Image (cartoon, rainbow, N blue to C red; front, side, top):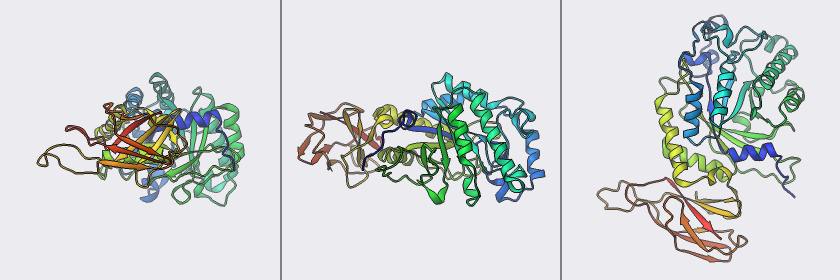
Length: 412
């Protein structure tokens, strides 16, 4: 069965490849994650007092956009409203539980969008569908859905062209009619080029939902390949992941992922054609922690050293039986090689690894390979091509270098 051709907005989204997720709201002032109101059983009347201390005094949208850009991220998805019900945008009278009624008194989404555009970053809006603040969510669900649509309408009309909307919360009422068609048709009418994404949650990772949906989601872990044969439309894939164990800032959460694991996770996403949406949790005042900035900067350094095929490269016929894989970028192929060692004296080299010949299959139809070289130093590599099999003699890193995943360009 044929695989459908992606619509332009979906193809453009796939080529963005790598983005920043930002979870920020009133909960950030407590430093214990974005679910603290629910999981710690804080009454709404007490929790909502956090609006009185929300100043956003260190929120610098341009600095955040520059941080994303330095990390090699092409888009940002920011929580305009999370499950707590507080909005970082001017709700224009829909509700007084928004940033305009806090000491901040600024439309932070307007600042965010402007900064993204100045830095060449595509702005996306996260918006909850679950709401712990609005009584109508439990007492008048149809009335609540109208409030939700009016909220989304503001986001679609007051901030210019956006990359898309990322919804989260339908899993909270699996047996309710969420009137998704009304919400999504509203978006498609007001923002025809916007991606529509609705998180299916941990229990339904990779599930294709409403026909309006443009991308499936994978939360945490690693994404699996999608079989798009016979689909009525081409749907993208995106995996979102935390840097530590919380989406909103966990001030005492030191369980950070290592830089090598983050690089490998980015590669694992692109191996199956999924975007990688990596989360940061700013402080209550709106500042990204230095450790998070440093990890992001490290990923950006890896992308600069290995090349841009990680964005527009697509899964292809060439494959390996281990972590190694290949991407096709237009008329070129790129091999992603893991676990190489550094060349040097055993007394100064900390870790070993597997250099030497690496085998790939699926090479029969790519044409005759003329040469293969590392993208980081242009060193030519020895290779053999025999029918469906491509063997490449992968050299180790010179002393002073270790890329975690090294990229070789196949020249036809």
